[in-house]
Length: 323
Image (cartoon, rainbow, N blue to C red):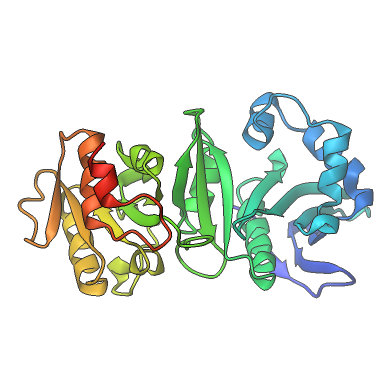
C-alpha cells in the first residue's frame, strides 16, 4: 500500500502536485529536453530485469534514445516525468511515462518507475498520462508487455485492457486500454471482420489463427477475477462487443454462461459462438458451438461463416472456405 497523498495546487507547467509524508512532495509535468540527464539517472538505477521489462534489452538505452524521449512532445507525442522533491530542496526524477502516436490513431505506452516509488506512483502516473491522451483525442493506448511483468499487467488489467496480439516472441503480449471508457475500443478503419474473444487470461488457442486469417481480434481477459471491468456483467452494453462482427465466449462454467446470456441480451444483433466446456451444457440454438477439441482451422471456417465481413475486405467467406 502506498503512502497517503494530499493534492496541493499546481504551479507553472505542472499538471499534478501531491504532498507526501515527511514534508516531501511530488510533481508531474511535461518532459522537456533538459530532462535528458535526469532520465539517464533514472534508468541507471534500474537492474537488468527492470531494463528488459521497459526496453526489451538488459542494457540502458543510448543517450541518443534518451534525448529523443526528452523531446517526444516536439514530435507530437506526450511525455511526462514525476519529480520527487525533498525538504532540503533536492529534486529527483522517479518516474516517466510516454505516449507516442501510432498510424491507427492510438498511442503507444512506455512507463518507468524508480524502485523506491513502486506500489503507488505507477497507477497515479498512468492516470495523468491517460487524461492527457484523452484530451488530445487519443482513444486507446497500446503497450507491449513482458508476460512476467505482473505489476504492469495488473495495472493495465485494472483498466479493462484487451489483448491485441501475441508477439513472435512468446514472452511478450500487446495489450490496449481505453482513455475514456472502462474497456478498450477498436482502432482505425473497420476494414476487417472484428471478433471479440472472452477468454481467461486474455489467451485462447485459436486467436492467432484468426488474426492470420485477416480478422481483427481483441481478447478480453474474462470475468474470473475481481478486477474485471466487464460492462456486460454490470448490465450495460459493451462498446467493444456492440461494434464487433462476432463474439466468442470461451470462459468456462457459470461465469461463461452468465457472460453469454449478457451478450445475448445486450448485443442481440452480434453473432455469438461458445466453446462447449463442462459444465456449460448445451448453449442456446442461436449460439454457434466450438468443440473444445476442435482444431484452429475449424474455428476459422466457423467464424468465416458467422461473422459479417465489412465492405472493402477483399477476402470473402466463400473464397476462404474453398482453400
